[in-house]
Image 1 (cartoon, rainbow, N blue to C red):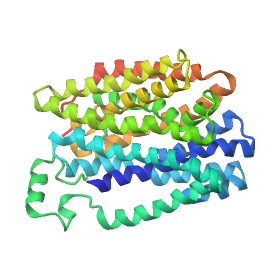
Image 2: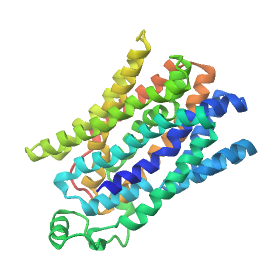
Image 3: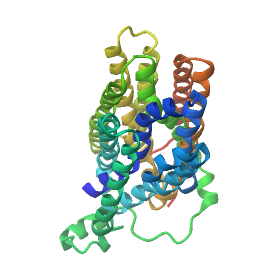
Length: 382
């Protein structure tokens, strides 16, 4: 299972690195907040299409259009990661371990963010901002070699798996037969599917804003220098890595004790919405940088309970089509990244950080209502 965590670590590096590198880059190239928002969002253009890291410095020096194209192509390369991961988990993991396994995999993403945020400022300080992209771009090549040799789509394809292990996994997993056709009309006619899509959009708006703009907030509002911005931005992601696994354990424990999957998913996702909403509203009232960092950490920590809410729900309601369903909902989530990240730059140029957080909080509240009214933990597509 560790190879799955490596997948998400590699998936999140580029955007986290850019969130740090954008500070000296915007100073060197004299970019406005609106332009910074456009650059930050360009990664999601390509990511959206699919649901070249080391070319970024060269493209930046050639000009803004080249940088936008390179970032978009990076997104294209990474857009397949989450749907593929969800589909693989549906074949490898028994239903009773669903929340914990998904939380463990997403921990790789959060720890990848920690690594990028911790090392990027040091690389920039010693070797300049291009070194961030060359360094982590090289790591992607190493990861690819490991993935090709160690990862397998299903237990049947793994030659190193013992016969008794294969029997156990295949006897308890829900996705056995390959999907030959996708019942799009049936899938899109179900209200819980649309609850997933809308909720994913509402959730990712706030998540992607914090992912891409948190170091800038620390630098502009809390007056941290570049190194401090990167290091303090680590704490929310560490909190997410811990709380995602805590939430997964709580969710699976509740299910094992007889609580319906529907109620478990609603409880966990409500925490994943209202927790971040509450702590973001507190940022305008805190009087010290330490309290602001604590609010950010608590916001992201409660956000991670979503791994046992909407992110686990794809396998609940359509186990054979979980990858397809995640592709649908993640498309809405990435649209939130496209519009939210770009809109944040525009809002900051004409308004304030309070305005940025108010939009996120409003969407969290909308997501809470939609999720609790229309979601279910029961299988709706066979």
